[in-house]
Image (cartoon, rainbow, N blue to C red; front, side, top):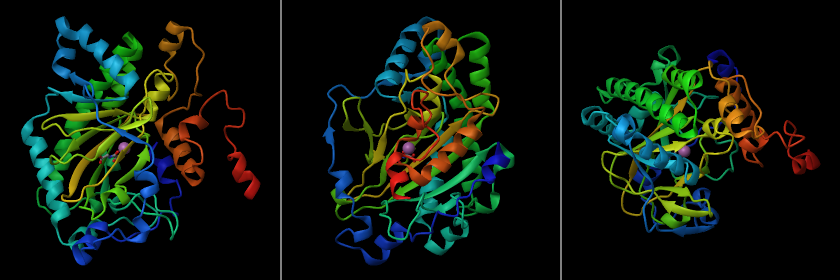
Length: 379
Ligand code: OGA
Ligand code: NI
């Protein structure tokens, strides 16, 4: 899987200067033109929730007497939202605190120090920005450092910051904690879906031995928050994503089933879980990989840590055979041999993403492997 991915040509990602530096040096009182995205921020509806987003208690899932009720809650959370707040997750405070401090500490360093971990041409890994493909492309109000963590041989340690001095230890520990947690969470998501025995073991094991990438996001305070976007709306490509907030500043929003942006408030000690497209495919569309985005804040910077969790190549990426058998429904999506192939297709698709990637895997679409029709007309 790793070989395949390294073969992907990402030379179309261009380096962009840091937003944090822009704010530090110029302290603009207006959003510079390249960052203007009022079209996105103001589009669509925004809604406050009367009842709050679903909260899932891992302790209750692990404890047989409370399991079945909590599995029902998990099932409905994955169907309705594809996102929930995980509490009582068992990850020790000490590891979480150390990771948060070191990520904040990294972004607080002078620019030249962070540049030691800068992305290399043609790669997303390291310190920089994601998916910038042209010199006039609009930009997001976000800097990031993106690092591969598991399996250990996939690490590019030359990009792992040496400063703050405990950064590497913190990331190693944190990503190990997230790997264990993800395997556990995926097991219960599988159970909520009705998967059992051999297939459930395969699912859980594939996440236990899977691929883990950590994206640390820095969103500087923004003079006109309604005119710039921290992260554009997207659905993650992962199996699941585990998101930790480093402070108490809201920014994450999730798209509800009725197309409203809903703010996901930070909850100290909680971890936000959102399903990625691999789980949407695995659940044959029963569960959602929700669109989400990050908005920015006028007064305060915001730092978040997203861990993208992928199954190992032992798991084919397609609708669950047990689920199809139990429901008698036809598969909505095609099956790819593993998550490496899934990612490969996703990255090629990035070049012309006029249709959502997951739709290109739909079996009903006759010409799913060709370019969208309107692009054929102009090329
Ligand atoms: C991501 C992401 C949200 C956030 O990194 O994919 O959705 O709140 N982050 O930073
Ligand atoms: Ni995301």
